[in-house]
Length: 601
Image 1 (cartoon, one colour):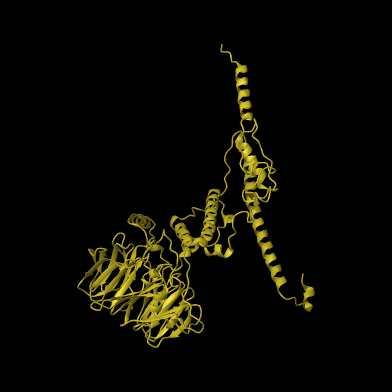
Image 2 (cartoon, rainbow, N blue to C red):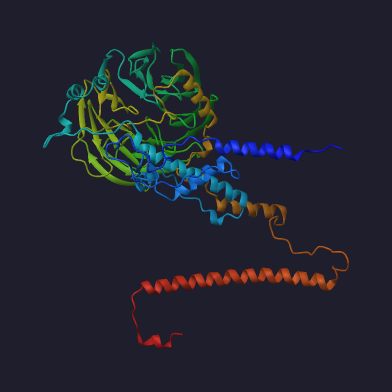
C-alpha cells in the first residue's frame, strides 16, 4: 500500500501561514492610522481628526478577497470620505423630472395583466433597460455642446427690420460664410432641396439646369443640363442619388450627374416627396395620380387616382409619412399608400390651395390659398387655430426644426415665430430677392433658409431656426464614406414597410380586438365548431379500482364546484366594485335630504 505522510503537509501549511502573517500589506492612504496620517493640502493646519473605519487585516481562515468585501460593507453605512473630506453630494446627481419626461416614449408597461411568466420577465427586463436609457439620455442632455438662441433686438427695435448683411457682419466668420447668393439668371427659376443631414444642396432650374454641391465647402459635386423642363428635384436616402422630375418622365441620377434610371411609369410628375424610413418616393402628376416608388428595389408600390385634377401642391408629415395634397377646390386631402381613398379631406380655403407645410412633430399644418389667407391647423383635431390675411398671398411655405414658419410672398420672404401658439402681428425676419420665389426649405441643423428664385439661389441666416445638436447615428453631416455605407446597410435592414403607414402610428402596437373577434366568428362558421371552446371535463381512468363510478362522479362534481366558485367570486367582486363607485359618487354629490329619505332601505 501507499503511505501518506500527513506531518509533511501539516508543516508545509504552517510555513505558508507564518509567511502570510509576516508579509506586510501595503497600506493605502485611507487605511493609515488617523492619528499619524496627514493631508498634503492641510499639513500646515495639523493632523486630521476624521474618523476612519477600523482596518480589517486578512486572516488565515478568510482570504484577502473576503476581507476587502467586509471592509467595503463596513464603510458603506458611513459617510464617504475622499482625501479626508466628506463628499457634500453623495450618490448620483439628481435628474429633474422635466428632463426625464422629455425623453419619455409612451406609457409604462403594465406587468400585472400578463399571466405568462416568461413574457413577463422579458418585458420587465425591457422596461428596466428602457428606463435606464431614458435617465441616461436626460443626464447626457446637459452635456450637449450647442445651445439654440433667437435674434433679439434692443428696446423698441423690430427684428424684421434687421438686414441679412447686418446679421452676417455681427456673427462669427463660419456663420457669416453661410450667407451667400448664387447669380443664375439664365436657367431659373430654381427649386431647392437639402439632404437629410443638411450637408448637400440640390438645385434644379426650370430650364434644365441641375447642380449638386457641398454647400459647406462650396465644392461642386456635379452640374449638368438635361435639355428639358424640370418641375422638381429631390435627394434620395443618401447624397449619392437624386431624382429629377423632367418634362415627360422621372429620372434618377448619381452624384456625378450620370443617369441611372428612367422610370417611364411615372410621367408628367410635378412634385415629389421622399419618405426616408420607408425608402419611398411619392410623386403627384398633372393627370391627378399619386404614385409611390420603392427606391430600394426599383418597383412601383401603388398608384392612386385622386380624381381631383392637376396636383402641384404636396407635402409630407414627417411623423407618420402621410402625404398632404392641396387641390384647386380649396381642400387638403391626406393619403396613405394602403388606401385608395383619402384618409381625411379638409376644406381649408375658399379658393385654390397654393402651398401646404407640416411641422416636424406632425401636429400643426399651415396652408395658403388664392383667397390670400394663411391658416394654421391642429392635425390632431383638424381644427383651425389661427388665420392671417396676407395682402400678396403666400406661394411657398416651410417649417423649420424649431417650428419657425417661412412664407414666400412674391419676391419677399417672411419668417414667423410661434405662429401656431399665439396670434403674431409682425414677422420675425424679412428679406427680399430680385424675382419671385419658387423654392423654399430650411436647412437641417443649420440656422439657414434656402431660397430658390428666378435669379438663382439665396442662403439666408435665420438665428434659432434649426436644432442645435444632431444625432450622429441618425444623420451625421461629418460622416465618412465608410460610415455612410454602414448606415445605408442598417437603414435597409430597418426599412419600414408601406403597409405600416397610418394616421396614428401608436396603434401599430395595439391589438385590434374587433377584427380578431370577426375572424374568430368566421372561423367558427367555416369549421362548424369553436376550436378554442373549453372542452367538458372528462376524468382520466385510474387503476386499482380508483375509476369506479362513484369516484368519477365525485371528481366531476369537484371540478364543477370549483368553476362555479370562481364565477361567484368574480360576480361578488364586480358588485363590491360597483358599490364602492356608487358610495364614492354619493360622497362627492351635495347632500340634499327630502321627506322621502325615511323610506330608503
